[in-house]
Length: 175
Image 1 (spheres, helix red, strand yellow):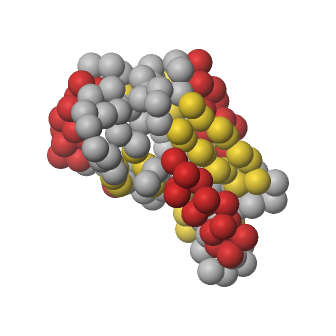
Image 2: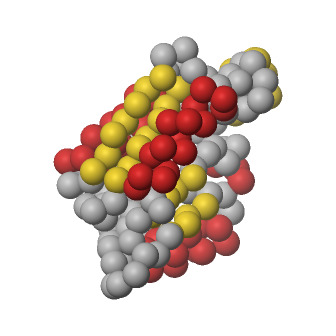
């Protein structure tokens, strides 16, 4: 989760929450300092009932979530995100998961999808999740670095198509 923005309304809450998430380029970018900071932030969020990419997500039940995924995304596979959405739903989230057929990673970019050979792909690697205690755990047993592949399609020029439904959802649920 690269950005976490809460939009408070009057009163004590619950507050609508919006999360913007995107790939961060691979596990090599996550240093020990980043993990320490992330664990501290996660513990604070857990106390408030907020979680993202947690092993046992505890969503704010009153907050609507719309997860939009590219069905042709070969960088961050949609199936893992769909599974995460199911976990949220099982734990009481008001979540809708939409998989857009033929859309690639970064589908709102202002260019058609193009193959980029230098991207590291971790979809065959063990998944990493945060426990309720704020610790990182890995699920799966594929060895590093053998599980890492290279190359994915990025882009899609779908921003114009996606803008109207996104703004509608945003206005109805988060403002």
